[in-house]
Structures are given as structure tokens and as C-alpha cells.
Image 1: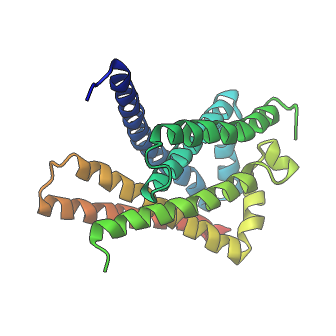
Image 2: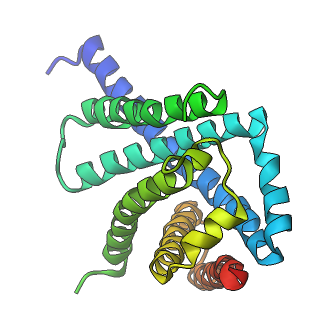
Length: 130
Length: 115
């Protein structure tokens, strides 16, 4: 059987997105675990009373933290949409079309959900909505 | 009887699906639901009034435990994937992660004690 350059490229491309998807899940997972630590750290200030908690929360009103918040949404959505793709493949859905599933579910659906959250968050942050 | 690995795989998918629902709800409740939240005014008073409802307390505590399980189990998978740990070291690592998870969960749950 002839093994054309096209086949080689197709194989390479799938392995490429497979490897990227695998790395995405690990890196975003570790980031989210680190975030959960910081999040519980902030929430734990609730036990120090209203003044201490509201002072801690005031830090997050800066433009820098609003931007980080949108970034966090991106990391969450990427991990979730890629996780859905992994679960679908594990269930036998889309087997043989993994690369399509990567672009449609992980990238496509992920981007839509991210924008649906990020655009309102951005508009709230600059005071144009809410 | 499912093998241990299959069970772990299963739990990771179940907790993942749960987190999808809980996280979407969390995002809505903390960022979108009311006008002060949309301005980013998530104050002690706002949280205290929500947490005074025992159902919300239960949901938030369950949310934290599910997230910790999913996150620490994922971390364990990453560590095991490197394949450097022997059987005893892997067991010790699992025990350490379970202890970290228990302390972490208590750290979060204790935050509600003055609300």
C-alpha cells in the first residue's frame, strides 16, 4: 500500500492535536487546582469577619484582577470542553473523527461558551452593562 | 466488579460532569444573578445571606469536596503517569493526597463558621 505524503501529514496532524489536547488537560488541570487553593484561601477570610473579608475582596476590583478573572474563565472552559471531548471519545462517540471532535467540541463549543461569559464580564467590568 | 483503574476513570468522569453543572451555577450565582454582583460587589453580607440557607451550605460544601476529589485525583494520575513511583511510594503518595484533601476541605468548610 502506498503511503502518501498526505497520509503522513494527516497522521501527524492528528497526533499533533492529540498531544496538544492531552497537554492542555494537564496544564489547565494543574492551574485550576492551584486556583482552588488561592480561592479557598480567600474564602477562608470569611471567618475573620466582614471587615477583613471585604478588605480582601477589594483587592480583586482592580482592572488587573478583572482581566485575570476572564482568563480564569478561559482556563475553566477549556478544561471543561476538552474534558467533554475526552468523555465522548471514551464513550465511543466520535471515534475515528477525533480530530473533528477536537476542533468542534474543545475549540468551537469552548470558544462560544467562553465568549458568552467573557463578553458580559468585560462589559460589567468597564461599567457598560449590569 | 470493576477494576480499580476503571473505577477511578468512572469517578473522574462522574465528578467532571457534576462540576460542569455546579460550576455553571456557581458562576451564575457569584457573577450574574443580581446587579451588585454584576458590578463585582461580592461582599460578606451578600455571601452571609446566601449561606444562612442550609441548602446552599450543603451545595457549597459538596461542591468543594467534589472539586477537591477531581483535582487531587487528576494530580495523582499525572504523578503516576511519570511511572517513577514504586508500589509503596505510590501508596504513600495517595495517602498524602487524601490527607491534603481532608485538610483542604476542612479549611474551606471552617470558613462558614461565623456566617
